Length: 429
Image 1: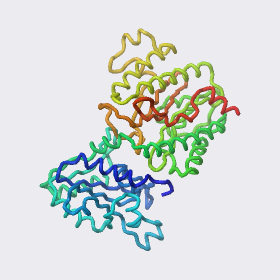
Image 2: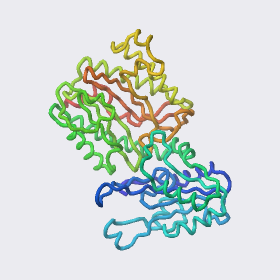
Image 3: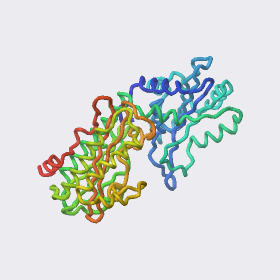
Image 4: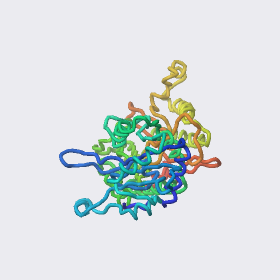
């Protein structure tokens, strides 16, 4: 791996936190993700299962973690299985973890080759009442493709039908939603790399450049700083396409007078930043663009101030909608009649602000966590209001990454230019 991983103490603590939530006489299993095919003999870049990564730090395919707290033999309470390498793998794929490297990174002493899994697992299972299996239970997950976890879960149910099966996902969602100090450092690194990419782009953008050239400027800066690349497929949308929330073609030439909306960020060590900035292609905002920009910025600042431990995000998102409603009234985009006649399930402001304001952030860009429970200190969320006016070919969204804290929230993107005066100055230097 080219990034600097977290210290093993983080993974030791993460496992200790997970096993606190297990019922007695339980065994839990976590599998790595598959390497996914493209066409012919092609494959996609490997991306580790984030639950396994959170518990071990092992960023390698064909890895399994088994946890069996209170097993009579202490050496068997944590077992890590990794892929055994050989000369052919070394020639074609390069270095794989040795047992010692896996021990050093994860803090797990009992590291075995994957070929030993079934024998060891059987010994642990027959001494257990419950089996905790893992699955992707994200509310927005697309589950059309069978995963390694899915295949394992089917095998396990067939082989051990008389055990009680329980779900690891709710526990993982709970413990992953609160970030350690070291995790926040990783997120800060991803945001700092994103900052450098954005500043580079501010000097590059002018009428006539293409969206894909801007994308290239970002990826150059990200990879140069040991990022794997984009945290998600970048959105670089000029003109009317700035009103399309997930415009990813990035194919057009930027025109004088247009707004350029860029929802693009770096990852670092599998932790993701998530930034949106909206800038004038010409280097100067028009008066109308300034008015809309400042309205979005006011909503973002007020929404950030609302975030504190104890807030429930579903309720918070509704409150932010009411703040946006006031700004849309000032801009003349809606009026009191629209509000009076609105459907409560689809408020008038939704015509120009079509999404929620915040989501969890971490190992996943849309990270795990509950929108229906009070958030806790050191939860990391985005704050990203936007106003989209298709009839004016203008969409403006502004997004920062916020660590929720009791006294004063920490903005991980505080150094990324945001004030429109600063953006104009940097674009015209």
